[in-house]
Image (cartoon, rainbow, N blue to C red):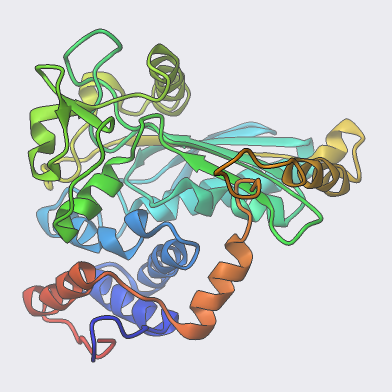
Length: 351
């Protein structure tokens, strides 16, 4: 099959589930994680979807990730909880956190659920979009799965990309979904460029000499830059406190590089929040939000700019298109998946 031929989402899910199962992940868990990984690609978060399969398999094979994790509630109140991910695949703990947060929001108005002993779990959008689709507001954040950033003005790598995401319901075609790293670029984008043999733009990374790095193959020689300088640094620290320290999870020098170390538990920390507008007496939040969004979209574009778009605009239709027509994987990723079939004895019939 041609490298640019579309792949049906279901075929890709089956392949990913098979790959995870080859490392001892139970069928139900493998199917759940595979669904979320492909969903990331369906919604356009390709750097955090199936692209990550090689890393997950390496950690399962190396013993750093527990294939038979028993995800449980370690602590709980009416509106809060902490999920223990048992060092398993991160998606399992984050789904449990998301669902429990939504349940608590319906009962108490707000649900805030932290995660300890988790792992990389793909894009945070997966754990906030469902809140918006259910009429709730959502938020999630995580301590990055490796330290690529020094404290502002320093040179020791003590922070990760520490992403954060927000969502809100809207009466329009798409909910508001905003997912970002606290660095100018996420490391996943740089790894994707490396796989594709492409350079990265200036301003993403600098070397220890302060000069720009544009070769993704030299990423270990420098560090990522925070958004907004000291502002991004402060936001990253705040996320580390709420997702790491608050959950008895790793932060600072305790963070394990989940790519280069496949044998150690990462104790990745995350949190998911859900908020019910009805708890504030607001029963038409989506209608109010869409009115403001429409005003923003109607704003006259500056010369050289496209029409104003809100975070999440067009995602629903684009996702449906990928489901209907199939996913187009980058040739380098397709070749990597084909290589995994040989390395792990898998069926590559999806290709």
